[in-house]
Length: 540
Image (cartoon, rainbow, N blue to C red):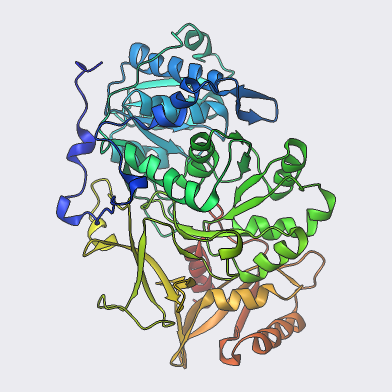
């Protein structure tokens, strides 16, 4: 394989070196060899250590052992290279729900030296076309059930010339795949060779492609997973985030494999379906969004989730009210965390006795974080400011001028406003563009949200600032009422009075709008820009 010519597109479209963040690889945990294929460590290592028969990937219908996954990955790699003509450095689009073949696709592409590009099942042809064109994707592995939109995109994308479909369908590759050899020698990758282009979820506009190396894949396993989550080989993971996004890829594929544990992949993972899966399969580690944990609370009495020992929350801020209610009901101390597609996974968190309810936590070992003002100067302890971070992973956008905005003097600028206390714990305030300034007061939307969530009539809520002639902005709350609650003017006053009694009165929402559901991405992130559009339309 060493004689195969490698596609250097990714090398040529990395940001200029002077726009890269500083990468801190000084910790022994992040000192990787110069030549490294991450799949050898994630998968092949377990077979070499005699653990091939250990359970690896479960579904509601069956299970794969580590040996079965390794053989499927090798057959896929052989198919990609031998039948589809993939060569190292080619970008390969992956499209499927959370199922074993989606996980195997990631591993096969990376093992063969390709670059995996996961995409959400719900994306339409136009959205897929934007990703294909941006990354100049040449190959695709797709669940047969999702063929239509991909084929429509491929008809408009000259670069996308090789498509393969798995699962039930007339053009399925399954029989041809079964005929492939079950052995495959991993591509001799450099540790700093791109193996993943992850696109952001688009909560604020046009998605960006973030480029990650083989060493980055292992860095998040050695960082958040090993040092904060601390899984064992006996753990069974499950969760709701799509593995097409990095929160799901880490939590449902990379972390369990790195630990020699198992993962339960669910194509449908509503809060109730997660609870049922935990009970049936005895899940011990759960990854999902804050809104899902909150939705689970009233249903907990109906399920036996005594096997669950850890729950990880990310994607958006975990309200203290949700943390306390879940803890009171289960005894589980939810692990909050902030991560980003740019950083690949969580970089600030805490677990067990180190958790302070309401705080995101402290930097994951190997990462450093600062709170600065608009000029880049450190702010005093307890004062809010912009969050900057650096560590073994960091932002490298694929040919995107926004690189210069995300990286500042070697630091990754996350776009979040935090404050740090005297003990080094970081407390979320708001997205930096979501601070509300009303009549000269700085008001944190999430603080108002947390106050509202302590009222029993509130199922979900979101708070933002809307223009006001007298005050500049006022606080507006979008509230999803609890089941059976009458949403009327009397409830508006109840909620306003409740906020005034819970936090400083000037922070109360002067406008309250009741809605059926909050707009969210597939990963559970709140799309505040959709609410701004709604508020703008209402005030126009």
